[in-house]
Amino acid sequence: MKESSYLEGQEHIIRRIKVLPIFKQYTEEQLKDLLRLSKIHQYQTNEVLIKEGSHEKSIFFMLSGSVQIEKDGNIIAKLKKSGDIFGEIGFLDEGPRSSTVRATSETICLLVDVSYLLNLQEKGRDSFHAAIYKMFAEVLAHRLRETTKNLSDLQIEYDRIKRAL
Image 1 (tube, rainbow, N blue to C red):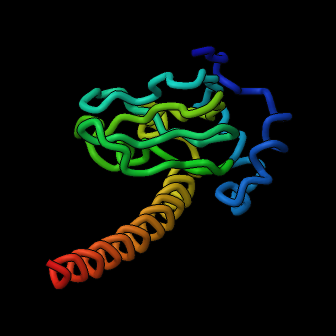
Image 2: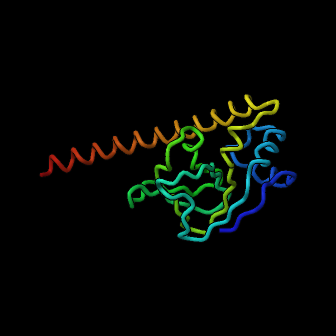
Image 3: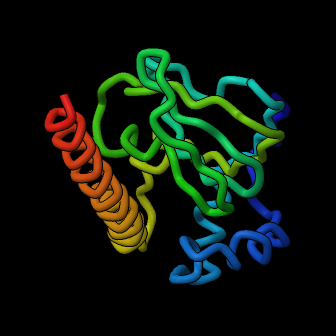
């Protein structure tokens, strides 16, 4: 893994992340605040970004590449789009990582250090947190819809197999 230093003062990166759907709603000032708490990480194929059970607390915004989410050694999801988010549960609770995330190609992520984000004291903190929570709510709602559809599809397939036996 290659890691940049914190991105404060590197506003040229704003142009790159502003095109991602997840960041379009944010002002340039909010994105500058986010960059101040962020680093760029580059991962090689098969490299682990998050290890299940660890207590590392970062939010990952995928800029390029692809990853797979693994639980107990099983692949449960694949993320392939720029702007995909993972590790957000670490922002929402204090528990250990619930799954392993592994790069399936060379992958570049913007990592936001949650500990800094939670300790922001300056003006605008509440509106910034509200925007982050809204973003996570949208991501989680989308994932819940997908999970519900997958569960329904599996139930239909289970019922079909059961009738065939």
